[in-house]
Structures are given as C-alpha cells and as structure tokens.
Amino acid sequence: MDVKKTFCIILLFMVLFSAIAVVSADDDDKSYSIKQAFIELTVGDDGLLHVDEIYNYAFHGTYNGIYRDIPLKEGESIDNISVETKGAYSDVEVIEKDGETQLKVYLYADEGHTKKISNTEVYVYISYDMKNTVTVFDDIAGLQYKLWGEDWDVGIDALTAIIHLPGDTNNEYYLNPQEYNSTSELRGSTITLTSTQIPKGEFYELLVLMPLDDFNDTPYARHVHENGHDKIIHNLEDSVNGRSFWNATYILLGLLSLISPIVSIIVYIRLGREPKVDYDGIYEREPPTDDPPAVVNALIDNSYEIGTPNMNGFEATILNLIDKKVIELETRTDSDTDMNELFLKLNKNHDADLAIHENTVLDILSMFAHDDIVNLSSLNSDLSYESNAKLFMEEYNVWQQDVKHEYLDSRTLKKYFNSKGSSMMNTIGVLGLVAGIIIFILGLFTNLSNGVFAIGGGIVLSVFSFIVLMLPQDIFGQWTKKGRVFYLKWKNFQDFLEDNSLINEHPPESIVVWKKYLIYGAALGVADSVYDAMKLQEKNIAEFDDDIFLYHHYGGYYMMHHAFETGETSANPSSDTGSFGGFGGGSGGGGGGAF
Image 1 (cartoon, rainbow, N blue to C red):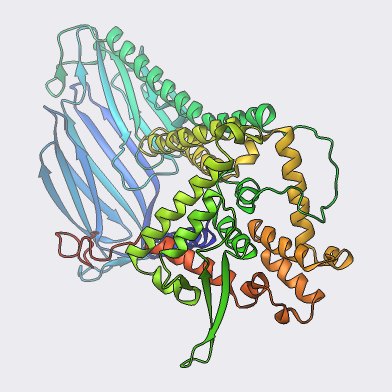
Image 2 (spheres, rainbow, N blue to C red; image 1 turned 180 degrees about the horizontal axis):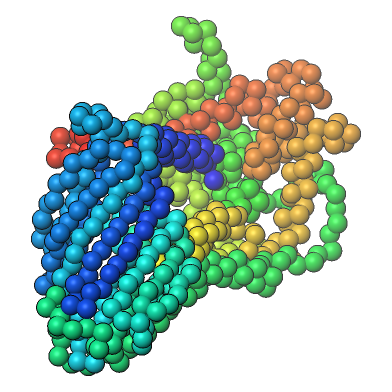
C-alpha cells in the first residue's frame, strides 16, 4: 500500500477527530440538563385530565429561557394553563400552533427582567387541563398518555409520576417501553412510579384501563361506541412484541459482526495455512532460481497482488538491461548548477535476446528519449505533465500484463499460489463493509435502546472488513508446495541481502555476483541494503567501471522511483476548479440557532 496515501488517510482522520473534539468542546461551553422531572395526572370522573409538571433545569452558560411543546391530537384541547418558576423570574408566552401548543418561558436573573439567567438551576411548574384525552368505550374507559415525549432535546436520568384515578377497583395499567420501568405500584386509586434513565429521542407511556362505573357524565372525554378492552390489549401486545422483536433484531445485527471473524478463521484454517515442505534453510547466499527479476518481484515483493510486478520489478528490469549492455549509463556535469546529470543511452543495435517485457521497458524509455538518450535527472519533470504521466502509466500497465502473460498466466500462477481463500475473503470484506455500514445506519436512526448494539456491531464489522481488504493475499491465500519452497528460498535470500553482517561473513567472490545482488535486491525492494553492504566491502566502488554500480552511485534508483510517483500522481489529478462558480460552491456560509 502506498505509504504516503496511508499517511494522508491517517492524517485526515486525525484532523476529523480533532475537529469533532473542538466542536464538542465548544458545545460544552453552553449546555443544559433536566435533573428531575415530576408528572402528576388527575383523571376526573367527568373525563377531564388535569396535568401538573415540574422540571428541574440546570443551566451551564447563559440562556434566554425554555420552551415546552404540548402536542394535541385531533379533537383534544388545552386550557387553564399556569406557569410558575423558582430560581428565576419569568414571562410566559403561549403560542398556538397546528396540532401543538407551545409554552415559551423567558427566564431572568433580576426582578426587572433585564438580565439573562446564567449558570443556575431553575424549577419550572406547569399546570393545565386537557379535554378529550380520556376515551370512553362501551365497556371501559381508557387513558393513553406519554409521561415523557420523544421530542425533548435532552434525556432524563429518572422520572417520577403520580396518577390519580376516579375509582379504586378493577383498574389496569401498563407502562411502555418496559425497559424504562424502575418501580411502580397501584394502591387504591393511585398509581406511583419511577423510571430508569430515558435517553433523548425516546418516550415513556402510560396506559390505564378504568371501569365505566367510576365515571358519571363525561362531557370532557372522547366517546367511541364499541367495546375497547380486548382490542386495546391486542394492540398493546402487538406493540410490545414488535418492540421486543426489533430490540432482539438489533442485538442479532450487532452479533453479526462476529460472523466475519469466525468465517475468516475457518477460511484461514482451510485455505490459508501453508503446506509443510522439506526445506529448512536459514539463508541463501546465491539467487535461488534463475527466473527474471520481474518474475521474482511479482511473486515475492507484491504480497497484495501476488503475480503482478510493481515498480521495484520495473527498475530491476532496467538494471538487467544495463547488465546485458542494452542500456548504457552516461554522466554529464551541468554547467549552470555544477551537478552531475544521469543519462540512459538506449542501444537499439544490441544483440541480446530480449523477452517481451524487456522490450516494453525499452519502448517506455524511448518515449522520453531524445536521440535514444533519456535524461533520468529530468524524467521527474517530464512526468509532472498529465499527458506524459498518463502515457507512462498506460505503458507501465502494459508492461505488467506482459510479465503476467509471458511468465505468470493464471495456469502457471496456480502452480505457485492458490488465491481461492484470499478471493473469498475479498468478497466477504466487501459484503461485510457494505453490511456494516447498513447495520450502523439502522442502529443510528432507531429510538430503541438496543440500537446501540447495531451501532457497535456495524462499526466492528466495517472496521474488520476494511482490515481484511487491506491484508496481503498470502494471509488467506495459500502457497503450493512448489510456491512455498520458492517463497522461502527467496525470502531467505532477501534476509541475507538485508543483513550486512551475513554479507560481511560471506562476501561474494566476484563482481558478477555483486551485480546479481543489486539486480535481485532491486526486485525484492532491498537494493539500498545491498549497495550499503557493497560500500563496506569495496572502498573504491566509484572506480568500478560498471554501469550497474554507477546507476546506484549517482542515484538512478531514487530518480526513477521519484519519477514514477510523480507520474502516478499526475496521471490522476484533482481539480480545484470543478465546482467554482456553481450555486452553493462558495466558501463560508453555515447556520444555527438557539433560545
């Protein structure tokens, strides 16, 4: 994976979380909570419902006041509204809306109503009567009333309620959602209850069924001429069962996050474990096989796409062409900067028998050559142009396919590596990432408390799936016995090249072997280690009249890699002008509001 891209992604997330932290810190500068809530309901024998509410607000920061929205169903009405406050002076505004009455309570710190409240506690007492809230059926009377509504801006730690009924026998009551029940009892004609914590966005509801004998004339009740008891109980059971079903579903969705890890373990055991082979070498002093460096690179150095060569293989191919005298090196001193420039001279009249992918490398270099000479020092600048970069990347992709078709087609690759497990886990990773996001969204947009399981499960599943997609192929894929021996031998040779102490103990006996070390070291991504070890062994390395050593000595390796990165970036540019001038595309803006 590209290290720079990875760093940018990590940095982006750090900036994102920092921004969230700053926003959270800003929000903390001004906040409020409702520490206690007390609701008292009195059901009159005439059907009138009297409501008393007490809210204990704790303000952090400066506020103008509070508001209370009281929804009204069709036919319901509210009157005799009274509002009092303790801990602050107040003015009250009653705003009638469609299907709602809003009480806007302005709070002041002084009797003259000139100073806003700040960092204080205030008790708000609200009292009112509601008509047509009690429903009288042919067999019973009922009251279904939300003691706490889902439209509050904050949750509450606990709610206390007292309900006075008109009679003291044959009353039934139910509280839902049941997970918010703490204590409740019916004693005589009075129900007393306390709730557990009720989060923001949730409601807490009372259903009371009362005998008709407890009512006299009921002008303030709603009348429905049918039997209601059995139907109400049926609807209640459906609601409770439905909520229980979705709560269980969200738990199940959360547990789905465990499926991918379990499946991944099964896939690894069945398809990812490496076969046992008769090879126990500690290191290899010589290249284990005579395969072209691009092939070694494709199988060993590119663990994320085994069988496809990368830029290290491209550069190793250049070194191999230098070794075959198809490419020669030339250095010149720039008269203006007094710095050495490195040139690759392409020998079009060579006698070497080249493979297809080697000819493709020559063709790519020829595109940036003048009179068959490539100025490697300026290649980075050439590839900074989008057209040049796209042309280079297109031909680079052709070179990758040439290596695969020439040496590592699907049938040949299967002799080395079985990708069934890695392909399966890639599919599972993609599906898991999509499922994780969906599960997270489902949990995020439900008011059910068990939605937190879906949120947590969705996050775990998404993160796990993303990690699976980022893992090297050989974690869940499997080398064949032939491939495993090939892999181990070349990895041991790589370890030998990276360990200066081993090379010091067993230095090559000829310059020819050093050249092989450099070529295959480039294919394995450890050319620097080989060159450093060589400098320790050969003090006068600059005097060697060999282009492979001079290529490293003058920084050709870095120039080519830097040019490749520039080309990769330039071939996929980001536009800074794509939306400029369009509606909504300008800087600034935003919005907000508070009371």
